[in-house]
Length: 114
Image (cartoon, rainbow, N blue to C red; front, side, top):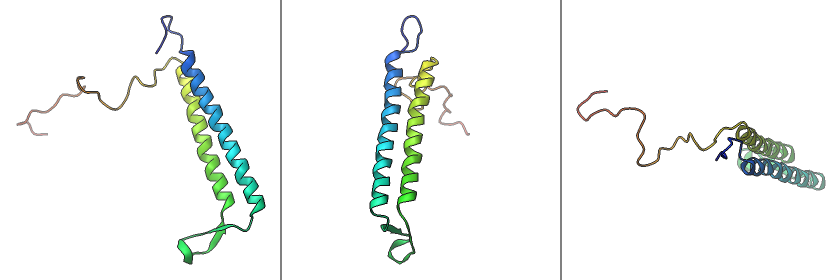
């Protein structure tokens, strides 16, 4: 919600940047915990394709998976904060239509063929 002088809303920017930083810190903490477990229990492995598959390392793919998705969440929040700072209203153009609003495209009549 822009203020009267059309400056970007500081509270929204602060909340989005805080969410970005907190998700990054949470991810770093989770990765540090996983690295600790990988050092303590290097023998733990996963099996591919159920109990009959070959054994594969568990820790490296798990750490990379967490790193990828925490990085994506952190980037998403930071990018949203940049867009709000640039003056974009993130909720203005939603895909969902609200009841009672006009539809932009005309509707076909019952007898019309498409």
